[in-house]
Image (cartoon, rainbow, N blue to C red; front, side, top):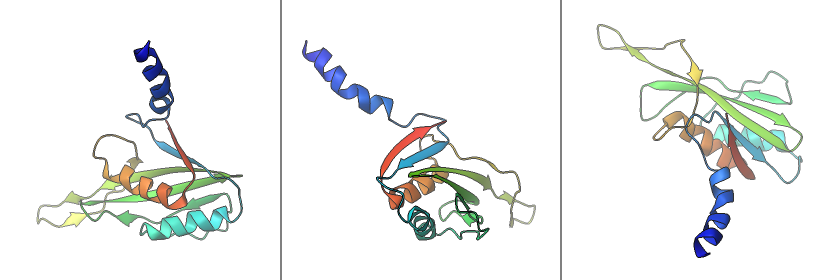
Length: 137
């Protein structure tokens, strides 16, 4: 009986937990007041430069270099009423024959896996926005 009660209490935590290969972070805020500004400030605080393309429902960023590995990341935030969906793309730098790094244009979707540096950057932005965080593919 005790085991059943413990399982029932832990079930909601397992449902909302991060799963390997999740690609989206969904943030639900209590209201939609100044949501564009909150998202923009969270992106800037994570060292992203936001592109100003006059689109109030989607924020995109310029490429941001990782501080702990050779690569860069682009973040995309889609705003829908009081919900924000964060996704991103990353690319690793390549070494040429002299040993210098070259930027690659081969971007791939950011996804969650253990020790993913690009996912950590998106989580930093999500925590800066605040609200209830969910994950999806």
